[in-house]
Image (cartoon, rainbow, N blue to C red; front, top):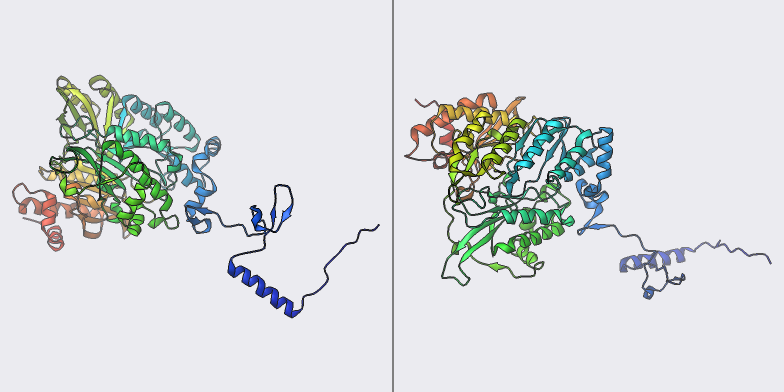
Amino acid sequence: MATEVFTNTVDFSEEQKHYLQGFFSGVAQRGTFPYVGHTTSGLITSDPAAGVSNQAAETPEEIVFGTPVSDLCKEERWKHEENPLDIWDKLLAHANENRAPAAEDIFRFKFHGLFYVAPAQDSFMLRLRVPGCILTSQQMRGLAQIASDWGSGRADITTRGNLQIREFQPKDIVRVLTKLQKIGMTSRGSGADNIRNVTASPLSGIDPDELCDVSPLAEAMHNYILNSRDLYGLPRKFNIAFDNGGSISALIDTNDIGFIAVRVGEGHDIPAGVYFRVLLCGITGHKQFATDCGLLLNPSQTVAVAAAMMRVYVENGDRTDRKKARLKYLVDRWGVAKFVEETEKRLAFPLLRFPEAKCEPRKSIDRAGHIGVHLQKQQDLHYIGVAVPVGRLPVSQMIALADIADRFGTSELRLTVWQNLIIPNVASENIEAVTESLLAVGLKTTAGTVMSSTVACTGSKGCRYASTDTKKHAVELATMLDERFAIMQPINLHVTGCPHSCAQHYIGDIGLLGTKVEGEEGYQVVIGGGSDKDQGLARELISSIKFADLPPVMERLFSAYIKFRAPAESFLSFSRRHDIASLKSFCAEKVS
């Protein structure tokens, strides 16, 4: 019997077409569509009650933390298309071919601490993680070998108490990462949309004035991040710092989350003792300091609270606009109260609200405490702060510092956010020997009051965003001021090459922001910034000036300071006491 084939050759009438159009329009408006599913027995059903997926429905757009993929910014799409943590084979391929990465992989490589910095340099920069700003002499030697064998022959101390090494060729990046692992260090998550190096007071555990040793907290935070895959690929970069409440600041008010040790005295409805307050949303490049959010924590709660806060940010931060993606903008949108409430939902313990005013005030900060010889709280031991102008450490000095720490200390070195380093645990009888050993390799334990507090970002020699050679200019200007003027109090000079403000120019006594002026290297000059108890954003003094013209202008300004300051008045107080018009007049007129 022949098989009969049926074909539909009937055309719909205009009335039928009108009916069907209305029918499907109504279906669309009601949000329902024809249902076709496949049951477990293999039969095809049109009954939605069958509980299987509707294969006649349009495939919904994928959502990433509440945002449709099509709305994501390009960096978020790159992360979604290929997880940057899973590109080891790609790193191997680039090394084998000695090949520079494409744009999307330049971004992904940063998850491994590898920054391709062309056109400033046709090479990679490696940014490390130094939790709590503490490393061993063995690690310093290993880093010196990396810098010598494959890099630029030096390391740079950063404004996050961290280290960077430059000028690696693609063929060496796997060797570098492997060597780093062998010396017990990592660079994972040190760049791009990740939690950066966890900083802490550099005198943790040795400061006579500290309230709490925060180095274990910074180490625990570091380990938690490394062990939490879901904390990579945040909406934007994220900074965390721990301050021991002691004599040297950790600049926590410039961080997304800052924990500071405080003391609560007797007479309150909680036991007296040492606790931590929580500051949120520091981002000085956007002219905002971190502010107290009203919480009081036991030391053991700090890392857990940070973990909860970060997850709130991961799930709710803006992934469509890079300029509005930092934590600040989520909290601006929600308010602090809601952010804290969402944090508390993720914790197994309640959060204590306690007024900041009921905590004891912090002791004075020693702005020069990171340079020179100082007593520790341990009997007959000292720490020695070593001046490292703008953080540059040649390999020879790195090796010498490791040897000195072994011979005269406890094989430990500490970095600071002021781009210098500290050798702790030096016995009294060894101080002179340490000083002489440092001098023998070109390092000092003293510096001028400007140079000792000068910080500078990488600048145009190694960063494609920078407009100026910041490190060179910072050293030249600080040297001139120290040689020309006898100033007793530290003066913070912050020199940054672009609006990203890695050197945080808005918190400097003098802040310089790189720009081009008539095709030459120049700066915007701001004045009167500060942090901690001196907190305040610097004001614009000069909108733009060629660097070649800047030293005589600064000389005139500081001459006026020397002549017109009140007894023992700091430069910061002097600059804040005068309005901008008066300060401009000092810059313009030579003081006789």
